[in-house]
Image (cartoon, rainbow, N blue to C red; front, side, top):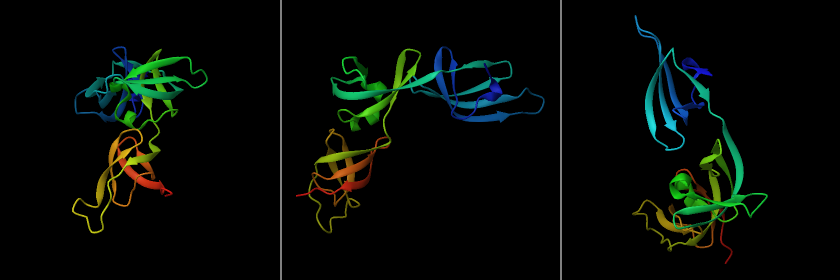
Length: 191
């Protein structure tokens, strides 16, 4: 059991049967009042962020969050299909909302971590940076810096991102999957 004053930033605990991560923690002791722990919490199932204050009488169970390596296969009709790494016959689908924005950067056979709370998968951990091939890129013209020197490109996964004018079709680029931003060119297309 965790006491209210043991909640620290990054800790995961169970409240009302659901896992919450502590995003921010502040211990307040006001004159003539009982001490209070003021927190900002993220519900790991819904993603909702709330502010909550806890008093000395409150305690919580530490959440047992497990990570399991799985392999991404494909997506279809707002579902992402995965399988176990060692047994491809054990397939399962996760809803698009659960996978989130980083899902648009997943390519076939990418290994990711499934985040489990009990037997339920509550999210996935996609690598922060991934190398992806540029499927479509309009030509960049010299002197065309009215748009800040960037253009929209389409990656092999279908994701659309902004990239510098020198990026061409066939190049391999590194993308930040959390922000959706171009990071660097890894390999220039061999024409």
